[in-house]
Structures are given as structure tokens and as C-alpha cells.
Length: 553
Image (cartoon, rainbow, N blue to C red):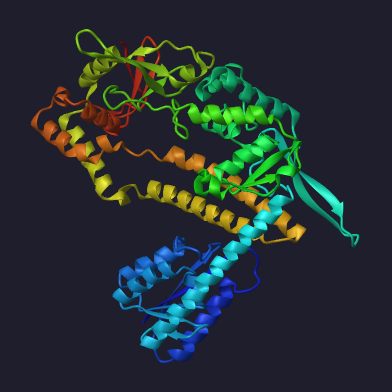
């Protein structure tokens, strides 16, 4: 008999229903109730995950085993280890029934093979969900209570401030401390500059150009991205707490924790619960706006004017980089790089000429975003460069057999990801780490909201900060390693390219831009633009062209 022991714990301490304790209880139950059977036991453990949903790595692995008919029994210490949500558990239990898997809860001793057992299971689940909702409500109330004190609860400190520990003595003579934001003058000047330039230029992109041209960087010594600039412009932490601002957030539907008579322009605001998973901005109804104990950097009228400008500015697609419009032009899209600074070349200045043909320019992205201050390489005329590259590549092209072999290998990679297993596993492992960290941060924030012990709160904040830094690094690594193909130019084009090549050895038969672009991306690693010539780096080892081949336009 194949048995799965499932355990779960929101990881904070080793006290309470620890993972080891849950496993011991389940094993004792099995030994007492199945003494004469040969059992194959597999343990699945999710540590640091909430029972509010079933998006947990080991739980998913266990359910995959269920669907593969690889389990006979699932046993857990208590019902809420599986789920506190009726809908989630109902779906899970339907899957177990479909695959004839018995479910056992040691603490409640449910026997799902009988009608009364199933009824009792549903009743217990109702109370479990009620408990979860009660806890969630208590967390919201406690978070609101903490917010009313104006304390800084952790997370990424806004540019212009530092997190500062403040000690105080209680009525009983005990020394305690909390955290608040304190001004950092040099960064505060940068914040003021960003607001001033936005009002002057009226565009986040233009503010980005200005900051790059003046070599103004973030505290991490990186150039400001449009997303970072926008987040600074909408952050309430910079804004003075006036009556006008109070009414602004009340009209948005936010949960404002202070009264109109408490408004004081000497202090700024603190906003809680604004960001959800992956730092996506929640709806204003979920925000908690509190009166902070730190000084504002931006006057209220200026901050409100900024919000109005952002709302009326529809020319910028917030949250996304400038699009590289390559659907109709640009055979060398995603392949062409600046030979001077190494930045990708972007397509600009698309026009229709008198003869109906299309003209376009490849520009260095560093040159484009800095208006020439970071790089001054000469632009490449795409409508001249693309045909010339294609013509020269036909002279350097591998044989028809090599092209066919390359495409077959690529096709197999799509059909059988295991052929690139090490790379895929690495990306998946990184993503799993990121997801696990995100869940842990959410759990820690929940506990932080209901914890009043100062030392414990301090430790929780430290853990959250470490996890956030780790996630930032993981996200950068994942972004570098992920290189998904454009859906329009992906696997569905392989068949047509294959058939074309098998009929002729001439590359010119690949007539559509999407097919040519896709084929080049399989044959070439990158192309470096050097004004007078380009270096083409092939990735077909049989041609021995890794060092690059020069093509002079």
C-alpha cells in the first residue's frame, strides 16, 4: 500500500505543530491501524506556507502522484494542514475520490469511506474556514492599529529616507524600541528633482532621459527606470498630510486611519497594503493610509498635482518598457547589438517611402535613452542593413543538411523539454525559490501584524528584508536566463521552414519576415554593429564560426 504523509506549517518557530511532530503522529496512526500491511510511505512537507490556498510546491507534487494513481492513502495530522478553504478542499477531495485515494485526518479521525465521515469532514471544514476568516479579520484590525501609530513596519525603504530605530521606556521601566523613517538629505534632493522635472517635462520618459544625461542614479548605483520613477511619483510617503490629501484618499475609497482634525503638514503619510503579489499595485480600497511620524519631502499641492498629471498622461504604458515594434519590420530584431557599448539596438523612425517600401533605423538603446550621453555610435539604416546581411549570409550559410539538422534539434527541444533539462531545471528551481520566498514574506507580514512583542517584530522585519533582497537577485537571474520565443515566430513556423529547405538549398526561398527572423535566431547568437562593419556570431559548432565573421555593409 502506497501512503503519503502530508504536513504543513507556517514557519516561524519550532514550537506548536512542528513538521516532525506531525510526521510522528501520522506514522504512529499508520502503525496502529495497518499493523500487518506492507507500506511504502512518502512524506510531503510544505514549511512556511499558509493554509489559505493550495498553491504549495509539495502539495502539488502529492496531487500529481494522486492523478498518476501512485497513492492509496493520504494522511495528515489535522484537516487544516490540507486547506482552510472549503472550495479548495472540495476540489482536492473530488480528485481523491476520482482516483480512489482514501483520506485520513489523525486528529479528527475522519473515515471518508462512510457517509457520516464525509458529512463530519464538511462540517469541520466549515469551522476551519470560519477560523481562517476570523484570523484574517484580526490581522487587518491589528495592521490598522499598528498603522495608526505611524511606525515603519519594514520593507524597502523609500528613496529619501532611512529606517531608524527609536528607543523608549515603558511605564514599568522597560526599554523597548520601534522603527520610523528619517530624512536622508542627499536622496531627498533627488526625489524633489524628479517631481520638479516631471512637472516641467510632463513625461516620465523625458525625466528618465534627464536623469541619465545628468548621471543621477539610484542608491544601488543604477540608472532610474521608468517604473522606479513612476513609483516615486505616486508614493504617499513623500506627501505632507494636509486636509486636501485626506479628502483625496477618502474619495479613492482608501482606509484612512486618522481624522481630519489630525492632519498636520509637518508630517508625511505612510501607506500599507498597497502592493500585492509580484509588487502589483492593489485597488485603493485595500490601502491603509496612516499619519506617519516622518517629515514630508513633497508639499501636498505638488503631490496632488503630480497624481493628476499621471492620471491624464495616457502616452506612457506604465509597468512596461518601451515597446520594440518588430512585428512588421526588423529582420535583425533581438540579434543586433551595439559594438561600442554592448546594448541592444532598437527599431525607431519607421516610415513608408514613396515606392511603398518601409524604412527604419536601428539605434543603440543606451544612446536612445540617454540622448547620446552614454553612447554616440552611428545609427544603422535597417532597410539597407537587413537585405545586405541576408545576402552575405547566403554566402556563409551552412549546407541544407546542417540547416535541417539544426531545425530538427530545435523542434525536438520544443517537443521534449528534457533535452535542455539542466537549463529548464535551473530556471524552474530559481522560480520555485522566488515563489517560496514570496509566500514566506506574506506569512511573515501576517504574523507581524498580530505581534506586539518588540524583539519578535524586529526579527520578523529582518527576515522580511533578507527575503526581499534575495528575491530581487533571483528575479534578475531569472530574467537573464529566460529567453522565450515570440509566439508569432515560434514552433509553428518550424514545419514550413523545414519543408522549404528540403525543397531548395537557397535561403532566399524563406520569403516571410517572421520565417527569416526565426531562422536567423536559430543560427546566430548575436550581431555586433560597428558602423563600418558587423561581426556575426554563429551558434552552429560544425561551421567553427564562434569567433565571429565580419560582414562590411
